[in-house]
Picture 1 (cartoon, rainbow, N blue to C red):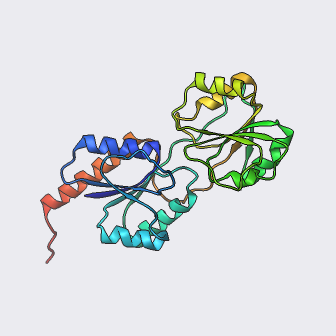
Picture 2: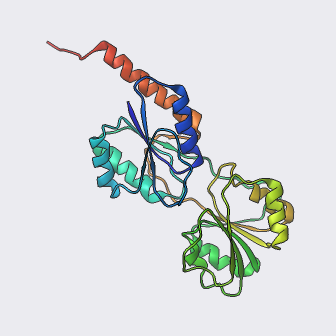
Length: 262
């Protein structure tokens, strides 16, 4: 049985690790990474890096490599690949499972301003603060490039490329982050507004708790829509159970042998 994981997330890596520990006979796992991070954390199993060439290219890859189950464990904001995965799975007649971490929910004391896009987030900022902690990733800074009156602390795994805000410092770091560390970061840089995507998960959630404690408003960019009709699980353990079920079904079918009518 061949499983292709569209990954690059903590959940995808944990899923690959759990599947390796399961040691299911005949199970082959291939992890696909987009290649946007210079030094990704490599999961166990086979690894391929780079795009497929859209939905058609992915469908061709699924057929060529005899994939039995496709798992979309990409970032919640990787909408293009998720829709491509849905189209490719339907074209190649391969079952698809989406592994999507739950989004964050505001808690008592939070001051959240939800927006539908980065452009909307940028438009809100001048009224909320002057020193911005920007945690939306290195590829999305163009939306903030015209805000010359604000200062930005930009945190990303790799160095950002222009266009980006003219007044900014870059902090190269990778989660998981701690609450104490986030508290100190807000204090040291005198942050008075935080911008984040609703990525969900625990690895980067401490910044929200630190902002709540400090009374710092948070601009939260809502997730893009996801493909409809795709089965969804919210954690690696649930995905492992689905793989076990599919694996057991294939073994059972093999033991029964082909059905001959007449």
